[in-house]
Each structure stands twice: as C-alpha cells, then as structure tokens.
Length: 89
Image (cartoon, rainbow, N blue to C red; front, side, top):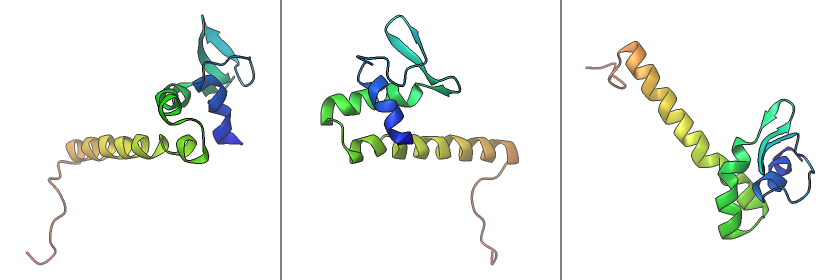
C-alpha cells in the first residue's frame, strides 16, 4: 500500500485522494510527513509505460543507485581514500 500512495499524485492527482497539500495544481505533500518527490520522479515513467507493479517499483532502483554513488563520493572525499587497497601489497 505504501508504494501506491504516490500513484495518484504522479498522475496529476485528478482527485484529492492521498494529497495533503498542493501548490496550485502541483502536489507537495502526500501526507503531513511525506513529500511528493517520488511522485514527481514516477510521473514520466507512468506516462511512458503506464501504471503497473514494475513501474511503481522501477524508479526507486536508479534513485537508490544515484544516492549510493553520491554517498560513496562524499565518503571518499571526506576520508581521503582512493579506493580499496590490497592487504598483500
């Protein structure tokens, strides 16, 4: 059910189901504590491929990959590492 919270907002929120706050016609909050960023990211996927179990879950994969890449780059810069080192040499 949690993944479906974003579908209505991603489709332009034709009704106010699961929309807590808007700025004009743009959904800002799905719930008082949950923003609509995932809905904004999912909207192009839904318009191209329709709504299905795959397209609801698909945007989270590249988002997680980009998040991990940014985190690893920040940690590398903070800790000064250049990559994994070999214990033998």
